[in-house]
Amino acid sequence: MTEIWTALIPILLADVLNPVLFAFMVYAAGTNRPVQNSSAVLLGHTVAYLLAGIVLSFGLESVGERLANPKRIDFFIELALGIILLWVALRSRNAQGKKPETTSPKLTLATAFGYGMVINFIGLPFAVPYFAAISQILKADPSFFEALLLLLAYNVLYALPFAIVPSLIAVMGSRAQPVLDKINRTLDRLSGFLMPIVLALVGLALLADAVTYFVTGESLF
Image (cartoon, rainbow, N blue to C red; front, side):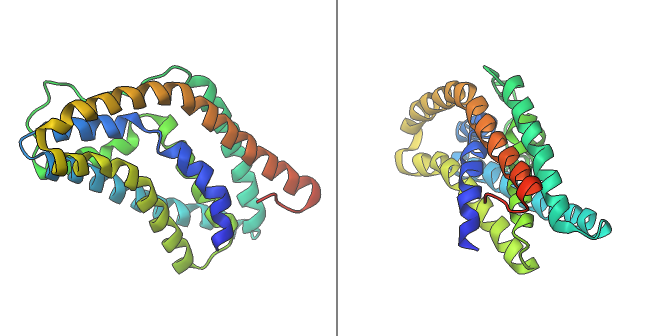
């Protein structure tokens, strides 16, 4: 199953360009329990993402079973996702993610975890690549255990870059806040510029793969 990462890595790179999650983690890092709260935000987001992936995988698999041709329906899904990604790329040019209000109430661990979970539903451009990743996993026709491991590995890799927030706070203490604020502003600018490009490239790759399959019977990935 290692060859599937050829398709998953570019999607993952698009997926992690999520300034909304990073902004909430930076906000959590400025509370009374910075390491715990920022970690809770990331944990909540990761748990929600993994559970959503499992539910979506079952849903897409059921569609395939009902049509008695799961591999072919996966390519129809891939084609639709490619079109959606291109549309989102056009819509997300120079867009910026919604940031937490500075007047938000003091965070508890439970509230931080809840914030992490609901961030999944803030901003469609930051969720669409995940659908593409799930489509690629299902297209590889793995066993249930293999699919679960791939989803888990994807989510762990997704979470790793964001772990810089609690890590810097743990090492530098309050001195890390200006560094995190600077990273946050830079990520916001980069995502506004790079997100449409990366989404468009991933969308074109999915379209090319699906069209190649329908024309030749063989996929590119």
